Amino acid sequence: MNEDLLREHPDILDPAAATLATRLAIVATVMPVAAAAAKAIAEWGHPARDVTDLVFSTSTNVQVPAIDTRVATLLGLSPTVQRTVMCSHGCTGSSSALRIAKDIAENNHGARVLVVCADMLSVVGAHAPDEACPAGIIGHALFGDGAGAVIVGADPQEPIERPIFEMVSASQATVLGTEHAVAIELTKGAIDYRIEPAELAALVDGNIERCMIDALSPLGIGSIGWNDLFWVLHPGGPVIMDSFAAALGLERGKLAASRRVLTEYGNMMGPTLIFVLDEVIRRRRQNHEDWSCEWGFMVGLGPGFTIEVMALHACSAKATPTTPRLKSSL
Image (cartoon, rainbow, N blue to C red):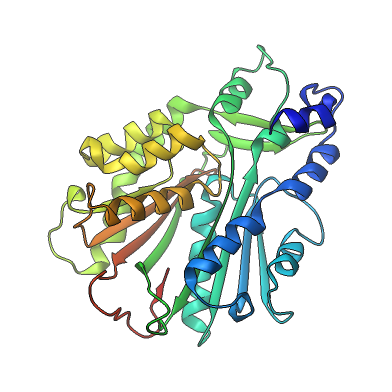
């Protein structure tokens, strides 16, 4: 969202004038999916045609065929690339997509999965503030736009492929009867938010430790404490992060990457977790906090109330990657 876009579409701030169809058409044109994907492919080191699978996740684009077909063309992906579109996962968009990519990579020899997640909430949800709807005002202040991409595969090809994290395990849990706590609804004019921050904080506080214990137990890594891990947490909002940290007794710096992403970019919904992952990688390479932690968790929090957990094991930066066969890495 910028001044040029507003000048071209002056009715977008008027909820009575701008239609959802208009907003979705704008998103389909300007969503920066290809740029994020091109960057991931360049860092991967192989040509785009070596991508075997494309998993695209969004909650702010609804069209058939989906935007992934245009992205595949712009990137020069093979016409035989297998495309999967995921929609309406909200803030767990990227964590769900990475879980699917892990399964594809581990069950299809030689698969290289391009995961792309993008959302543009400023376009589909922007309108003049409505004092009668405080949740909408909070949403406008909290949410932002973004696109992120990751390459996932198993059995890295040395020396070109240099995996950063091994995706050891993934799980999803849903707290029943909590659909009302956070929701995003497509209406005639735009997207409407329904957010209950206090209830969300209570849900995190009451459920997150059990989910983390369930995810940690099968790993067999001994009596490791929560502060001995690195954390890639979706920053739903300051209250959510504070509740998460309090529930696990985390030191303040443990969520520094998540807090920085929220400060700089806002909650971009689906792609936010990829931004946090990128910030964690940057900090580890610069020997910031958590650089020596071998194990960590990626945690997505989204509508439902849904908790996505993925255990990550850091690949050595000094030694040749030794990712076991059929274990996926990113």
